[in-house]
Image 1 (tube, rainbow, N blue to C red):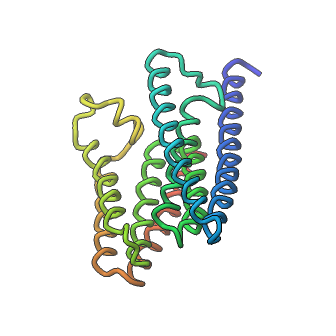
Image 2: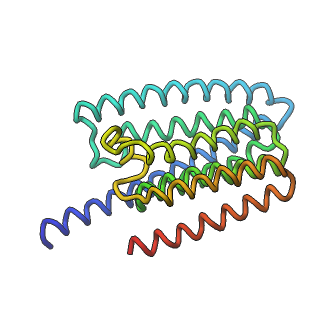
Length: 248
């Protein structure tokens, strides 16, 4: 095996270990949140469960900020160990996910655990897409996931629907604005969000249609909003097939 193939195999092995690590971490977080939710479902341990949830949320939030600062410092000074499975970036993601899970249980007591059963596998799936596919497809998956969640919120009449709608529209506008600015102005940001090869017209049309779709879901609500969500899901699945074939 020549040096080029050996480096390629090492890179593939590293990605495989990272994906295995994130799926294992997802299972552990799901088990922990399930145990915490069980405490919050019984009257005798309800207050204890809420206190533990708030404490874990505060600690994980502080840990996420600390790990993010550590990650940015290490990357800036060239001390980030990119050849390791567990580094400051991985710890930042884990802490942020735990904090988000606790926040979901705090804000959505009755449906929180059902949301986590979807939220955590989605995070693991996005992590896999981040490492295996083009950057523009990863960004597309993040935005479409938020859009589908928005349509569900309007279908279920959840109180967070307007907040989620605002976040989704902002996420759509970011890549649209980036393709309109000169590449020489923000080359690193554009490369991080959309990659080095992207189609300007397709990007504008794709995210523009997504904005129109979530706006329509906000107006019609009810079962028709879920139909919009299913259409967005079908579009995401078709895009996944396209990028998979393209990567072969």
